Image (cartoon, rainbow, N blue to C red; front, side, top):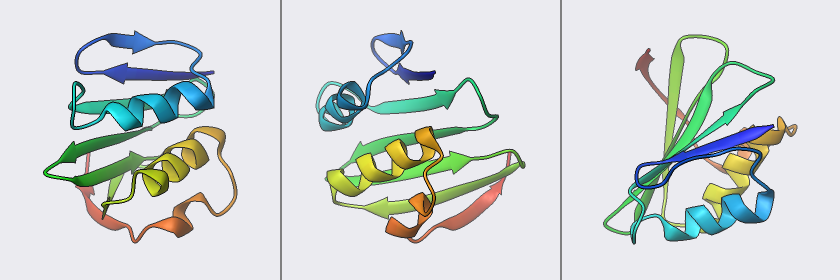
Length: 102
């Protein structure tokens, strides 16, 4: 199960792919950020949009946090959906940089 947490509306449990895409589309308008959690794995992924640029971050089972930046909402959706379903190669759509440990 995938849960999405927003800064405005709280948590959405058992989110569909279409709902996650719709929430990404709202970033920078009425939502500042979304956090995506999977109940079958530790960690999280999240996205923020500011000044037309998305910042995407994820933390897997380690303490390392990774970040990437893009202006393409479709790429953000691909990364978040890929992470949320643990799809092979989901990290390949962006260039990730370690931003430290949590």
